[in-house]
Amino acid sequence: MVSIKIFLNHCTFHANVIEKRRKSYQFLPLEQHRARDISEAARELSSTVHPCQPSSFPGKTPSETFGIAKLMVTGFEWQAVDECKEKLNKNVKIIKERGKIYLNVFWNQFAQIQKMRSIDNVFIVADVRKFEFSGISKEADLQLFKDAVHNDMKLEKALNIWKNITGFQGKIYPTIDEYNRAEKDRKLCNTIITSIKGKKRGQDPSDTEKDEILRYRVTCERTGKHIFESAEVARAIGGELQDKYLWLVDLSTYYLEVVCKVISNELVTQLRVTHESKHHRNIVSFGPTTLRATVCYNLLRLAHPNLGDIIIDPMCGSGSIPIEAALVYSQCYIMGGDNHPKAVFKTKSNIEASSSKCKIDLLHWNVSQLPFKDSFVDIIVTDMPFGKRSGRMIDNRILYKEILIELGRIMKPLTGRSVLLTYDRRSFSTALQAARNLFCVTKTLGVNIGGLQAAVYVLKRTDISYEQFKPKFVKHITYKKK
Amino acid sequence: MKLLTHNMLTSKCLKGVTVGYPLGIVVSFRSVYNFKAKDIKVSEVDFNSEFIARIIPKLDWATLWKAAESIGHVGELPQTLIQDFETNEEFLKKVHHVLLEVEVINGDLLCPESGRKFPINDGIPNMLLNEDEV
Image (cartoon, rainbow over all chains, first blue to last red; front, side, top):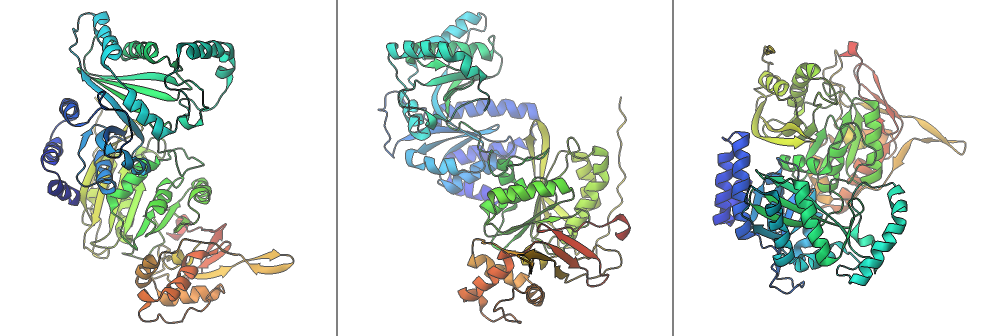
């Protein structure tokens, strides 16, 4: 609730709009939610985010703003918004969409953007334009895209920014001779390139040599009813861009990815800045259900760690949550543990690799018998077994109840808080009923974890002491299959 | 295992144990050039004076002192907590060293009531219980 207040105090019009939407979302079913999201955001987008204006001279004066799009795990948009406000400026205008946010930043703020921990990918918004599709002829609609790219779309400023940010060394505007030569060379060594195995997609733009010609690909994402398909749009736009700028097409080892988003009748052209998603950090040896570092950061943010707090992850797996916590919240003491010996060893190697100088410790324990005193721990952040790849749904019914009661025992009354990520909502809600006197739910978020509709529960410990508490008997309701 | 962690651990979950605090530490020996040395690692951890000042009230000072003494790393720590430790940077640094930089690598934790051993392997205490102990 604190963040909402800050919102209202500092932003005038836009905050109100976003705030209203934030409230109204809670009562909308998912489909309506999505429809509102897209149309409203599109309307706001064209009015507030400055695509890099073709008229303005490409340069890097600090006062000049440019539009940035950021992608994060769906469900954590508000955490990303809060982080932006915290790290950039309280008054920055941010448009939230499903799984992404848009904002304008100054040139000199970009270093902070790249340091942000809640986001996965960053794009530069190069162009926003509207079309009126006929809806009858596919060729005519695709021709609209081609004409727009050929005549109106000026990517020079966005490209300049992209080049400066990513440190691309090669040539963005080659001559015809250079292009022909490069194309001929490439045909000769094409067989060699395809045989090189390694990263699947994308190359680091700063690895280029001086006279290398830009290699690019166009990716299209389409939302709404259209007569054409996204691959056809990508091909049309990609072809026009090649004619215009003489770049080399390369679908796998590209330096520049142009992402075109067609949202009903609007086209947003973006240039990818992060050649690799930002969640690739901290972890060296992976377990079967290792969480993304960005998700871990967002979960930790929800717990609001303070100076001197003790943070515990009782089911740490390969240790992504404790490591992220140790790196970000150096004012806290973090302990992680698991009951599987393999998980413990994986966590150990990960801690040695990325956070050996931090205040972190590792134990081998069982979550239903944690070796702590009563009412001692401040914060518990954990990713519970989903019952899909780790554990079984049928075991979760009993396990979740045991977990919640044990967590209630070790947490500090009144101030203790826990953030739990789970997929098995049914088991969780029955467990919560059994332990209902110990916790009150302050927030729930629907989150998309690898395509699964997971939920984050933020619980606060009530002031009832563990001795007074008696678990409630809850009958398991089983639904018959039709 | 860091001594700060040791300060929080109990064996309360064992059947028949009511308090289970503090756990005793038995450090095993390793041979270094034919000499026997205690299997303890001293590593560097970033110092944060505010954190230490905030964590000291949460600690059980007597337990910490005893644990540090039993593994031979008590240094110049006083047996009873001094007054005004928040502003005493020197003192906080000493506490920081004992709490976070000294790690027990191999040994055992001992339950004070039942005498059950919890082995510490490679710096990780194994607090798992058998089914009949719960």
